[in-house]
Length: 248
Image (cartoon, rainbow, N blue to C red; front, side, top):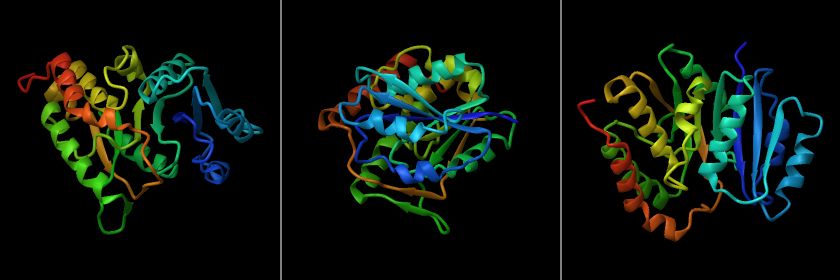
């Protein structure tokens, strides 16, 4: 049976963590959750320890004394989990569970549907039969961002920024060995690093974008206004660094 571990990055989540949903998630014997306390200054760590009590075999905690940012927290946790040699797949979901934990099964199903796939990632596409609730401003600004990201990556990706991704563990060091350029837009770099590793044409058969059944926006974003105005600069830096070439 393949083992999956989902990283949950947490920074000052005392009032946002949906404790009951985590408590009620039985998942399966093959799924573990790794909570990363990213230098929280509130009671997040204490809440995580209470949540973990009695489930130490399936709920792990990685504690950073200083805040490192979401990208670095996920990167370091991914490397640590990979080095444990226990998990076949490692992913990450947002702590507020805007993507429900049950979507792990959906992503894993698609990842297993073709042996070529190395990364399955969620996509917030509103369609019949789905429940996708998102602030209109964020939806349309997100569409603009994803369009530019798709142009830079030269990949027809609809939603690069959805915080629900699962990948095969043998790719962890390829993707996470080096620090990311961007604190918030590291998802773009994940795709860029896979393009660099496989080549642009081959990578298209390695990725699967999965329309989620449920995604519900849970509150205010922690992304600062300064980070938002830096988006064009960050995207340009990524484009220059990874030198994505359509002929590769």
